[in-house]
Structure formats: structure tokens, C-alpha cells
Length: 135
Image (cartoon, rainbow, N blue to C red; front, top):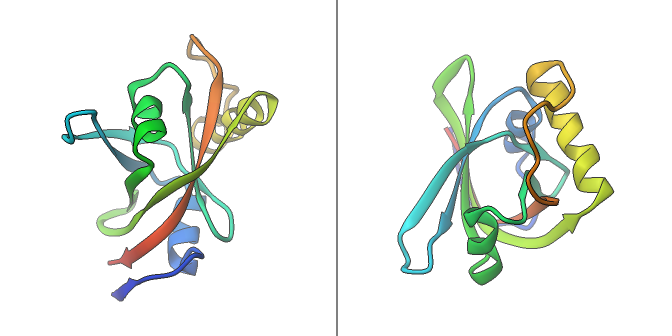
């Protein structure tokens, strides 16, 4: 178990889990303050978690209004092993880069091109950690 840390970079164990074929729960805050959680594909750089969604989804509207989020990445082989990142969406990326990222995630998780209908522009949510915990 790793103690919770306050940093601006991803813990190596968090990055490893988010880079693997593990699902994440993304929690955002609704306009009335209630949490909203979705199971998502996740990715990572050295310093941020990356989540891909559409600009017309409620979760995107939520982070535009309040960028605070929690992302919990669960080990697919042992869901009792997980990483929790509390942080903020500090950047959004729309357009071709977001579409390429979605294709990369689809290959990672499904081994095929992305096949679900896309109703609006894709967007990458770049999440900078404020607090991290690995168990």
C-alpha cells in the first residue's frame, strides 16, 4: 500500500495501472453538487490521467463548470487493488487529437477500431492530480 501523496505528477504505480487495460470510475459534480460516476477507459502521461468523452455529455458540462474530479482505476485482475486520484481537469483537447486518442483507447481495450456512434466532438480531459492513493 502506498500512502496518499500530494503531488503534481502521477505516482509510477498510478501511471502503470492507467496505462494498462484497466477500467476507471470517473466522478464529476452535477450542478446541484451531487456526484455523477461513469465507468471509463483511461490513459496516462507522466503527469496526468487522460479520459476521452464527447462535448455534449453531462460529464463534460460538469467539468467545464467545476473541474474537480476523482478517478479510481481498478486492477482488472484484482479489483481490491486500485488507484485513486483526486484532481482537476486542467486542460481539454478537442478535434483530431481527441479522435486519434479514442482510436488508441479502442485498440487498447477492444483490439479494434472504435465502432460506437459519435454524436458530437470528442474531447480529452487532462486530469492533474492533487492527491493520489494506491492500494
